Length: 153
Image: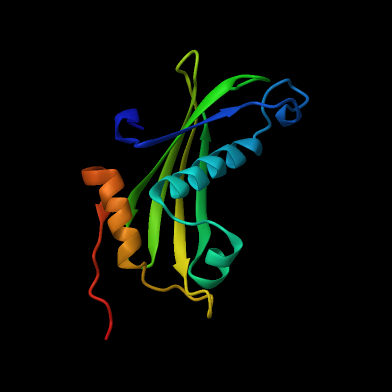
């Protein structure tokens, strides 16, 4: 992945309880690091993430999550978690993540995932609203492909 296309970065420090019996970060923990990056990304966009908004205004579900592990990290390493939205379609959007070890610059892991926007009343996929599209378009610029659908009448 090209680091120059990422517009958001969050720092995470490896904690002692994230280490496995080999002395490295357990593979399952990387998903948590990418989740921290996604949550901070949405906050940075200005999206309210709280129980009320998720229950009543919108609901996002992760439907695909791909991780590629590149190198191990250890206790107390400082990591840069880069996050971006790469596209927005009718009812789904794609995100990408990259974890870089801060001091060495080595690539630790890569992540791609797809989220589906659900109607909170029906739990069925629904069109992603225009406000979200505008926020992403403003934040990502030409680095994201924003599809503007014709909404049903």
